[in-house]
Length: 143
Image 1 (spheres, rainbow, N blue to C red):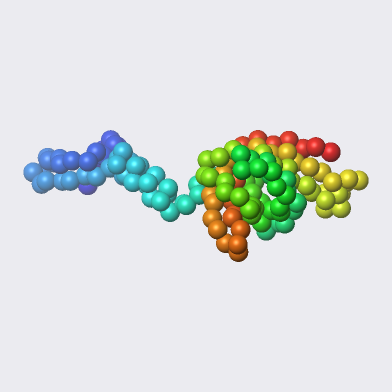
Image 2: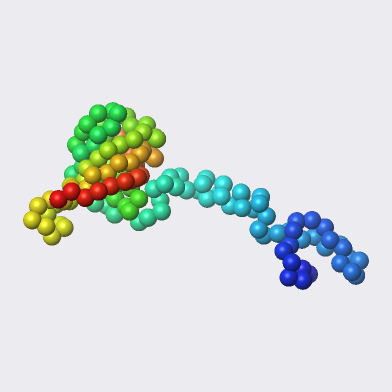
């Protein structure tokens, strides 16, 4: 069935030979909605999963509504960081944190600090502590 270069639309058409043709557009609004819902359902944490994660354990100082604490990163990506904390940090809460990169790792005379601001996009419990995934909204380097 040809549509003569026109966009196909969902519905019934009668070609000139009298047969009934049913066409379904692959670009229909419902198809796009379904694809977006499918992606959202199957991507548990869309804010965090757009980049590769690296299992890097670095010192991190965390400041949030729950208080200040020192911990270490569990993994880092271009979009965010995961770490464990002793207090509850609800999804959506704002977090300020500083990650310290050792001088010998970055080829510097002294440690490089990265001050970050983000928000919690995931929290979970395990190993007697709470873990949080934080998306990084802004950052700057300190030397």
